[in-house]
Length: 128
Image (cartoon, rainbow, N blue to C red; front, side):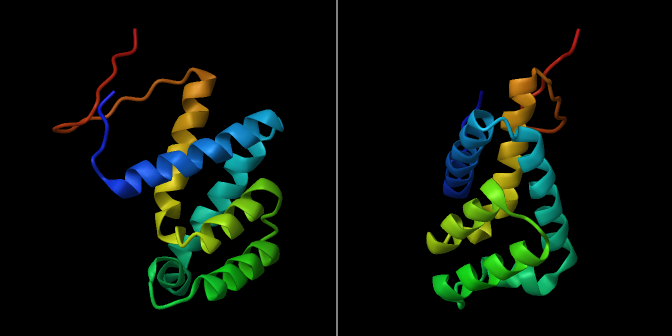
């Protein structure tokens, strides 16, 4: 598999891998995927939330408080709620969309699902 040179990609994979391991251990992969899907919809649906998560203007404490309140209101708790708090404290909220993608890939790989991508420089897999 080709490795990306992007540090965001490496960070996203590392965090998503940790979340996936915890979800697998607690037998909650499907629940975590569902919560991540709801979180993704919130981010895509709110320019303000997207800006809060990606802007260096906001302190980690401000981001922590905001994502904690948003997750609580959206009933996103458990592993994903804790995960959001950790990445807010670590100033990694901007990488959440990539983390969600990476988590989905870990889950798909675990289920034995194969993906195919078209395009220059992308990995392609043939299903037979």
